[in-house]
Amino acid sequence: MSDIVQLIKDKDPEQKEFHQAVIEVLETVKPVLDRNPQYGKENILGRITEPERVIMFRVPWMDDTGQVQVNRGFRIEMNSAIGPYKGGLRFHPSVNLSILKFLAFEQVFKNALTTLPMGGGKGGSDFDPKGKSDHEVMRFCQSFMAELFRHIGPNTDIPAGDIGVGGREIGYMFGMYKKLRNEFTGVLTGKSLAWGGSLIRPEATGYGCVYFASEMLSVKNDTLQGKTCLVSGSGNVAQFTVEKILELGGKVITLSDSAGYIYDEKGIDADKLAFVMNLKNIQRGRISEYVEKYPDAVYTPADAALDYNPLWNHQANCAFPSATQNEINDTDAGNLIKNGVTLVAEGANMPSTPEAVNIFLDNKIMYGPGKAANAGGVAVSGLEMSQNSMRLNWPSEEVDNRLKGIMKSIHTSCVNAADEYGQPGNYVAGANIAGFVKVVNAMLDQGLV
Ligand code: NDP
Ligand code: 2IT
Image (cartoon, rainbow, N blue to C red; front, side):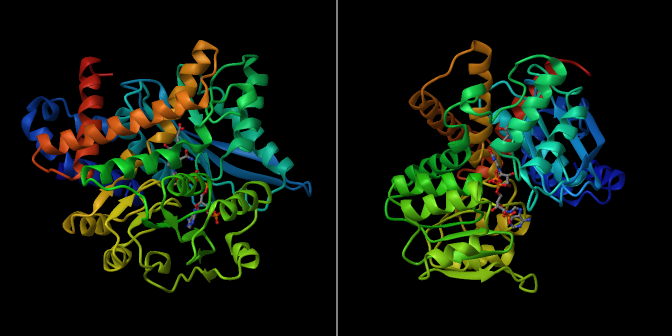
């Protein structure tokens, strides 16, 4: 295993996030490799860590002042052993090959856990939608799709949203794909309801994460009722995480964006959440504006000089990191535990550093890693694909019940795999092993391709 990690580091020394994601998985699947010598013989680790295909392209577009701008577009088609490539698109200035390869790698195992037939992929651009007009975003999305359309399709690769890509961006990209291909197909998920979207897809990641947290609590005969929760981010995942926590009787006291966080001791209730949804989704404003509307709350600007995030340093029972990767470091993990947190459910992808994860595991925290806890989003994307294939729409209760069932099944798979390999209660090992075994066996069935 260490040979493979060294090889990956030698090949792409700058891809730190990708190395991080690979090391976490490879460390936990070691007992599986020991039990199945044919995996080693077939060099399954070498194969599963190399993307099937990496597409990288120029995205030229014109801004509102008539200046020509150039961004970089990517799609990582990581693994198609159990279904077509599936995974989101991220538009954020930090996007690079390392971040997208880590996300695509995580997606492979996450998608395997959903029980649905989806391979793993991820893509995006270093384009920053923040501060751009709708027309600029449209021109960018059209240019992005003018290349991506050659590589995707409803049976090949089905992108969706992620950071910086929501309903607006999916709409512009779908329109361009349809024009170029002259086909109305389910090539993207997260579409609007009127043109092929699924009910509950916008809610799915946040709701699913809270369902997963409830499953972890139910093992201890506990529920979210009366629990105080810390949530980071204020985008799609954070908003619907808050909505579901409130519905289940919990209290949420924090939200954030990249500029800072708000602490509302009284709790973010349904009215305040409606304000946040309007602020972020319609006004495209900043979370700092929350304290102008609700002056009892406190806004703290982000401070890069601090080696910890004060958001994670409040008395609480549960934490739902829902912003971005590596947003909880070892100091934050220590602060969470010191402040009474006993459950961490990751809405974001890889929000905890390896050191933070070890602290959670050593302290027997109920820790649901992203690839299990946030799989509800891609799961409902899978259900959107099913509905598109059948050319019908399920009512929201049907989708929500399926989502609940899938999150329960992911939880059971994690628990069983962790038990089977002698690490009871370790959801990291459980999620990695359950996802890995499914994908690897499919790869072996299909030969050396
Ligand atoms: P959104 O773009 O809707 O929201 C992202 C939120 O995170 C914003 O509040 C944003 O603040 C904040 N954020 C983004 N980058 C940073 C950063 N570098 N530092 C601090 N804050 C940051 O994205 P989503 O809610 O969709 O995604 C959030 C997380 O959930 C990501 O990790 C994503 O990969 C993961 N995820 C998303 C799924 C989905 O279905 N959408 C499914 C599964 C996981 P700001 O506005 O300042 O940028
Ligand atoms: O990280 C993720 O799982 C997503 N951004 C959702 C992917 C999808 O295809 O719905």
